[in-house]
View 1 (cartoon, rainbow, N blue to C red):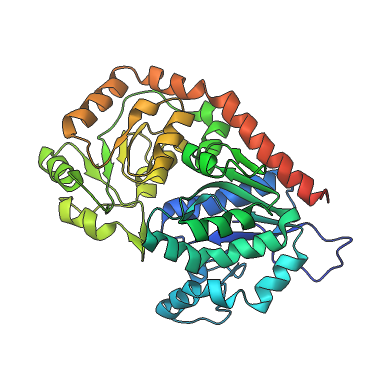
View 2: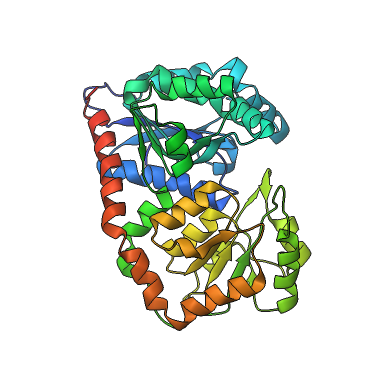
Length: 375
């Protein structure tokens, strides 16, 4: 990623400086992609900007612009995670506070880190991210949240979160449930996921031709119902290669994949670098969206609301099916539909391009307005 640490020059002649909140880890390619997309969006508005990032695994990015919320020194990973878990109480370091105060713009990467469908999820969200929401709200006139899935939270935490989000200049959300839950806030706007916005910018590069052997991406699921039976059926069918999309400490798909794959599964990024596209059947949403950006048709085994909303935004809702209830014949039928008429698949998505591009332009206008000093 390009950019420089903020130089020691006066505010009158320095380029805009941006603080990016809520980054996670580069070991999950989906999370790393969202950080890259946040940086790229700001760069399109202000090519000469500089930035710093608050990340859960700052050291993993191997970049001095990435900062820990409470760990300015290099602690072992376990202590870093404990530090992040205490942010709701401890607040940021003085360095993070100063960067936020001096920044011309504060943005939040897109994602689902503010989720709260269960008590455990809410506690994780509060510990690792609530302090960052408070910081953004404190500087709300210059803060923009890129497309999120938020909540649903319990009554008290939900009320507190909505109050803070209401102080932010704009909160973009990427699914219908979040938009409904936050309907009382006038600053909330429903748009597609950041990766979908990126796809729309590269739609003309989408290839149509012969497809290689399909690829399957698995992940662990709570309340799996028949999901693990499906993985066994996929393995026994010998119709798929396997790939790994996430290897982060809390989101490591490699051990599960190794249980079912008959050979070592490569990273998804390696597969997407091949010349011949394949159908990617992915249980991770950003495995599917990364595939679309690379020109690979995809089927998403959705386990959360964000997946269904994303594929509705893309104009192909029928290609997002329940991960917990999907069957191999159901997946095979969808793959056959793509192979029989790939042009129809891509044309359905292309038909959404104008609407998706308009949403991205609205986000860019907000970013431009903040950088130009509109409050």
